[in-house]
Amino acid sequence: MTPLLEVRRLRKSFADFVAVAKVDLQLASGGITAVIGPNGAGKTTFINLLTGKLRPDEGQISFAGQDVTRFPTSARVRAGMARTFQVTNIFPRLTIEGNVAVPLLVRSGRSFDSLRRLDSLHQVREEAGRLLAAVGLGGRERVLAAELSHGDRRLLEIALALATSPRLLLFDEPTAGMGSGERERVLGQIRRLAGDGKLTILLVEHDMEMVFGLAGRIVVLHQGRVIADGPPEAIRQNLMVRDIYLGEPLGESTRAAQISEVGEPLLEVEQLNAGYGLAHVLHDVSFTVRRGEILALLGRNGAGKTTTLRLLAGLTPPHQIAGHSTDSGTVGGKGAEQIRGRAVRLFGRPIVGESPEALAALGVSYVPDDRRIFPDLTALENLRVPMLALGRRSERWTVERIGTLFPPLAAVWARKGRHLSGGEQKMLAIARALVADPKLLLLDEPSEGLGPIMVRLFVEALDQVRAGGVTVLLADQNLQFARLIADRALVMERGRIAHSASREELLGDQTTLQRYLAV
Image (cartoon, rainbow, N blue to C red; front, side, top):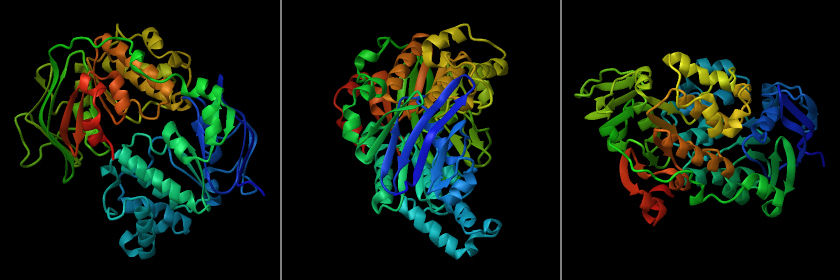
């Protein structure tokens, strides 16, 4: 039987390194195959080659018996390939229904119909509603995509892919950054999609629990080569895989520094309220971050963690909202985001309404969950941007010191941002924040999409960052990561601080934390 997908001797290099090194792969119709490997193994490059985002230097890609090696992405989609991205890719200014309508109209040859009112396209709306219901977003068709939580954006992206009516669906880390409830919902949907054998699924994922519980076949990449290929149990027992990919178990011994005694309050937040349009997201949020500590904000997707960090970073220009004025002022963005609070103080100084540039000058650096590096600049050039913008060079966080903090990054200074792996991009985003010489570092989902070895590196690096005089406020869903690095944690639920956990509570009885963070 002709395989649905056949890859022969596929190779792709970027300047001085080989990302994919003569990979061979065959996929029969139906089933779920997972591609795993450490950060930088070539997984995303491999997906980009299959879907036409990148052209191979050598090799051939055949799909449904047809050579598609030189096909553009659009032709591969029409042939029956669809994908989701490591960083969610949707239309934020359209409604959820409007997002799904775009590929539906293209598929039916009615692209220009999108200029008409969607209300009149009854068949398109009906099919969009069916797809949204299938991924768990039914009944929310008129919600703007920009207002969705990170997890719901992932679900919407799956609906967009399904709207192209694919035979092969490629997922690039489909559950990255999701809480356990949303994660199980997505996993259930993936199982259902593959259940009737009509859809073939190839996914890249770091979550080993997900991979071994979902995939019938696992392909392991390392340094751009396939080092193992087989059923889950065979991969689990493979010594090379265990050594190269899984590494040693993470534990308390990975901490590079002891918890130090924290100092006076650095950041004080009192009764912070924020929202998007008419949606009230944060409700009277109050907490204090003390100088020299690492504080973790934990919670499911949509709990308000990212909104808290973004507003503290001053990313939304201030504006006055009728009925919402306070002593500290108000902040909003293009009529979408609103903030009001009794007080938000940095070093005892009120900062509500300050611009991102002003806060950066005061010593606040923000690292978003999607990294936001400059893809056409080299890693070293990315580091120079904040130095030029702020007109200063950090004496603490030199390129040499960052190279010791993140050894893998030191080997790719000359590589362009677009050619870095997901883990390398995360390292670069944190490094870029450090060269701004921050007093307060805001990290959004730092452990998202990282394999065990890379998580260990990040734990050790953040310990050194704190030892270098930087206070850290991070938002994450990974309780195990928080246990390794945080001095204490705050659990957010529905826009409120629902629980506060000391270091001892993080390491001890998990009953309360599991109640807030689990399904």
